[in-house]
Structure formats: structure tokens, C-alpha cells
Length: 501
Image 1 (cartoon, rainbow, N blue to C red):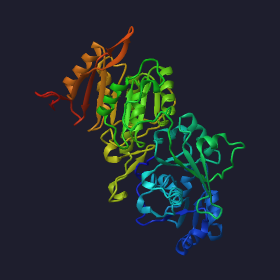
Image 2 (cartoon, helix red, strand yellow; image 1 turned 60 degrees about the horizontal axis):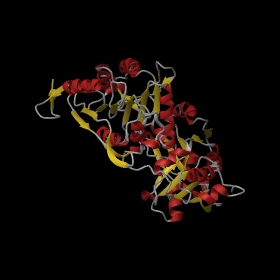
Image 3 (cartoon, rainbow, N blue to C red; image 1 turned 45 degrees about the vertical axis):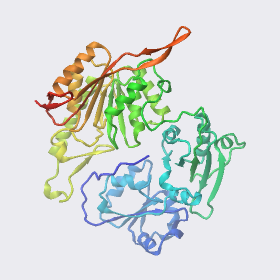
Image 4 (spheres, helix red, strand yellow; image 1 turned 30 degrees about the vertical axis):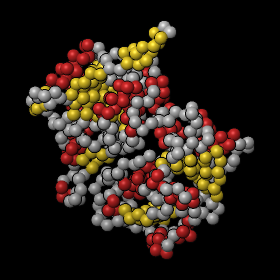
């Protein structure tokens, strides 16, 4: 899974690096240069996991600090050492599924001096002779097995970072269930260490081995993907078959879904709000477009909301956030809390003299951030998580949308108005209508905001007695609008044209 470029959540207090981030191999101190060993020996504090600290124990002359679980609980102690000589130990390349990503959420790049070691994936590619950039990498540490599904394409090389010693067997069993039992799995253990090992199986042989093989907890898998005819391969283009989703009939049909995704235009790191999500098919295919995308799905019916979440997990995108409740009330709650939070952040912003001259002040609000300049004016273009209370109960972290899809429950213009208010400049709003009353709303929205109206239909071959004929589905009217400014727009003289009101 690709990671987003990290933004520091606080202004640096020093112009030079005070934290040295060192990648270790399984051979520990023996694999380090003399210069790196000297950095560890000279450090006032050495921070790392218990295994990392043990690997370089002979080099440590200062104090040591072991990461707690979760790692974030140790961050206050680490950040309190700012300005001291601190070494943080990591596995392999710290910025490849490593602790470097976490540190960059709290420190500027100028505060960190990173000395990477070859990652386990780099070592595995070297051992197997695989071209690393042609392969996909998926981490199963803290993620469900179904996270593998989007990466399973025949003929593809796939590196899988295991959670523990049981992961290879679990993956082999899952591959059989998904129709990829012929895939070859190479398990590489303790790469770079003196007791490095490599074992090769077919997925079927590994899953059925008795007794089950023992693997080291420190392992990764290299999978040469082979699919059976029954395998459900998640295509790179939108439009998965309807029956791949669990649904009660409330689903955007395959052909309409493909057109809708093309109108929403998923882009790297962007966020979709799917309002009235039904089975969750639109949000799920948005997430399948790229591993960096995010989506929040709103559904009034608790049973459908639970179904959408199950679909997301089954189709390999468990990161879908599903909220149960009335969409207008959820949007009202979000706007009230966000604007109050933004105003509070703006009023507490440090003066220009107290911040670094070449960086804006950033407040951390979860997986992303917003700056003082945007907080003062309301909504940010940067996806933002807020820890607020939802009207349906429980903490929520709703990243701001780059695109909104209105797929169900559209009864008046209020929902369209609130959705438009939430979008940043450049954001897209897409709504589909089948019944005349909803079509009238979309026409009114087009008159106010501009955009484009398109009606399309589809005919599918069906039986008529013993013969066949094309049976038309209900036609769909789709409204697509892009927010070019904070002002409403009205249609110009040409179709889809617009001018400022």
C-alpha cells in the first residue's frame, strides 16, 4: 500500500538534525559501518524495539528507551528529547512500511538524519532475481488478509510482509479460497542474518501440509500469482459485476457505476464521501482505484451500512469508513464541529515570529493536517480527520471530501447545498437520479451550480419465453459539477457551460 507524503504537525525548533534514524538488518551491529556504530555509541538516547536494542546492545553507551505498544504512546517521551543526541533504530529502510512514516507526522525532515539499510523486500528481490519495481508490496501487519485481494493479478510478483509466523499458512489458505491455489509462495526468513532461510511451496501444498511447517516470526513472502478460472480478479478499471457485492437490490448497477466512477475521477490521495451508499459499491471501487484513496460512506439503514462494510472487507478495501445516520444531520454536525475547531485553531495560531520562517504552522488532526492559513478561512483542501462526536454516537474521523456522490435519499436541494459547501475548489459533485422528482432536483441544481447533465440507459440480453431480447434498464440522469469557486454558477449558452452568478 502506498503511503502519503508526510507533513510535520509542529514547527521545528532546531535548524539541524537532532534525531538519527538508523535502519538495521538481521545481522545487527555486524552489518553497520564504523561511522554508524560511532553514531550509536555517541547518542545520549537510543530508542527502538526490544529486538533492535538487543541487536546493538554492545554499542549503546547512553540511555535506551524501548517502544511501547502502541508506538504512539512513546512519542511524548521521544519528542521531549528534541535537541538532544538521539538515535532511533528501525528495521531495514525506516521509510518503507517503517517507523519513519510515524516520525514524519511529528517532526520536520530537517530534524531527521536517516541512514537506511536495504529493506527486506530489496533483499528478497535480490535473492529471487525479481525486478522490484515491477512487483507489488502489501503489508499484513495489522491488516486483514483480504487486503491482498486488489494486488492478486495473474503473472504478477507480489511481496507480502508477514504479521507473524502464522501468516504464510493463513495466506495460502486464503489463496485457495479465492481461486489462486496454483500460486507459488516463497517464504524468506531472517533475511540478511546468519541463519537466513528460504522455502518454496505452492499455495495448495502449503495450506494442506501436515504437520504445518514452522516459520520464523521474522519472514516475508514472495508470491508468483497464478489464477484458476474461478478466481475473481479485481480489475484495474471500474465496473465489477453486481453479484460480487452483497446487496438487497440497492446497488448502483455495473454499467452506471463505471460511468459514475469516471465522473468522480479518483485521484491519488483524494477522499470520497458516498452519501446514501446502499451496498457501498461506489465507495469501494473508488478505493480500489488507488491504495492512497480514502472514502467515507453514509447510510441511514443500519443493515445496509453493515453490508457495505462487509463488502469493503471482502473486496480488499477495509479502510472504508461507514457512518450510519441521516446524511443531512451528519453533515450539519460535521460542519458545526469543523468550523468551531478551525476557529479555535486559528485563534491559537502562533505568531509569525515564533514559527519557522520557511514553513506554515500545522495542527495535527489525525491522518492528515490543516494549516493556519486554511483553518482561518474554513474548509481545507487537505483531507482532515477530526475527533468529534457523531450524532449517531462514537468518535468520528471524517476526512474532508474531494468528491461527493449522492446516490440515494435525495429529497430536496438542502443536501446538495450542504455538499457543495463542503467541497474545496476543484471538488466534484456527482448525483444520479432515476425518478422524475429527483431529476427535477438535479435540473434545479444544474441551474444554480452549472455542470453537466447526461441521461443514459442500458439494455441487457434476457429471455422472453424460449427466445431472447434486450431488456432495457431504467434510465439514469447524472449531474456532474466541479466547484470552480465559492460562488454558485449558472449555465451558459452552451450545454454544460457556466458563468459566475
